[in-house]
Image: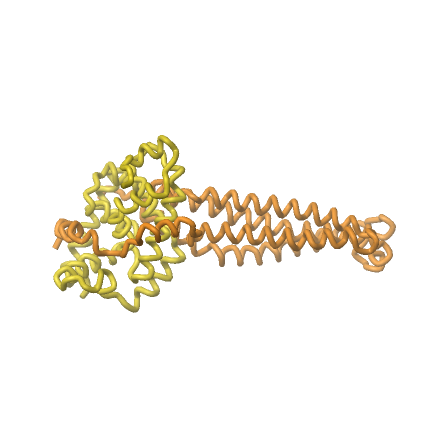
Length: 214
Length: 181
């Protein structure tokens, strides 16, 4: 049997394959959310953003009013962090929107998805990792400024504004270690989340690659 | 009665009512049905994919331009949805290793002759890779190489080479024992 025979079977079997929903059901479908991976990722990013806004917002508001306003700097610190995180999530969302290209030819769609997903993972890694030491430095600075007595008892804070070279080295080493740990954790997590998808896209693209004429 | 403006007109005017879209789906339901049957092996997965394709078509409609034919655009969206949803597909593959039968493909009340033909057809096609399936489907739907290029984004020479290899593969599968059963 060859493909021409399959063609005759194919033509005969048009109407029996899948139940087509009625008009009302199709109309209902149009109001539903997509279950595609990209749609789910977009929803996740929005949920994360909402959580960060809620969490950071609550902390900022709390320190604005608590302790007679003594720790208002923490409010501003958290507001700035909130803006940084919002920018981070916005960039992630924009990248995901770039993957909505179902109307492209199949090969172009897969290429676009692969390129964008790799950019996304790269940004996720860099942005997500950089935010960890930045947040720690930021909070340490606030702690140092607002609680000088308590911080002076800890050896990794400068005393009376003097930063000895050894302490600078210690901070650099600590930040490097934190960055490396955050990088490893993020990389493991990112590839656990997206690695299989990236491999799948590469595999599909390899099937589409030009065949050399034998 | 719904009017029958071609989709190109919708694109030019930039609007399409929900009723007109539903009419479009019904006009081209065969295309979507075949893709669902080709890429999924359980009835539940096929219904799921059918719904997802409709949602994606509706979402992609505002981006449709007159650069290609309406059917070309529908093939692209449907194939992209079926092929690139990898996580779901892996679940489908796991499910497919345990059961696969003709009554699950077609309506249960199909004649045995038709069921046998279906089994024959899908036994052959399920042994192909995702991209090969797409190519064969377009071929079986009598699409020209030019249209295939437009849908898949592969140049025509390469398509011909791939098609010849697939024909050979199908022939060998037949020889090897009636598509594996």
